Image 1 (cartoon, rainbow, N blue to C red):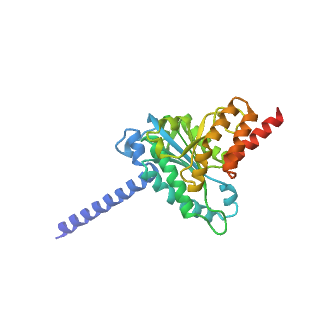
Image 2 (image 1 turned 90 degrees about the vertical axis):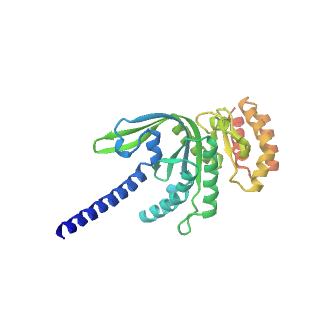
Image 3 (image 1 turned 30 degrees about the vertical axis):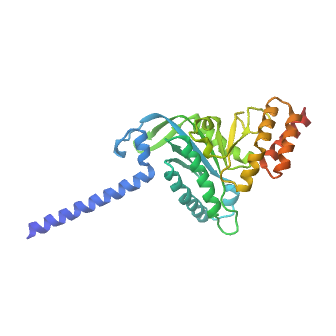
Length: 297
């Protein structure tokens, strides 16, 4: 009887250890998702070692909360974390839904990787912006959370850095930097999603998106890289979408004239655009830029 009791106790202890191991594995996956293991061609997190790396072609989505510093200054530390966790609880499942994986949380923003075609990242960005408008995540009388999104694609180097006591995953890539720059450019152009020319040309179904060019290679604009970039405006109201479609030709012609440094002609096209859509932030931005440029000539 004593032997049977001892055996039963051993079985119980083994079951407890197995259950504990499952919990540990679940927690570890929250810090190092299975998708990252796949990217590094590993079957288990125990196989991860310092220096493991893999070069991959990825679409990178960068997202950041607008005016978060001013919002957080009016909150207690506990309230800041409550607000951030409410925000991440909304957007993180959307990233997973569209096949992405969050690579790194960076305070009020993060970088996500998409191994599939860029269409998935674009659709993900649109869904995030629509859900943020619907949910109106806020605390007290403070403004609801709004975010800017930048998307680029290209080669990335994903790897593991650290030492025996502390490891971390890291992405080294100009693509990540560009995505962050595009995200920051949403402040300049007062929009929500900006994609690179590389993304625009890589879309498998561009007809599924509402897209307009918002900058051609021209030194008078605010974007540091002087690249051709595009706005995705599917998350705008139907009225705004319609007006942006009507003025798209005028905006394109204005951008070409700016590129040619024909600012007077550019000003004419911007004026025509504003007749149709007086509240267009993009046209207002270029109207100001052109006036300042002509003044300084």
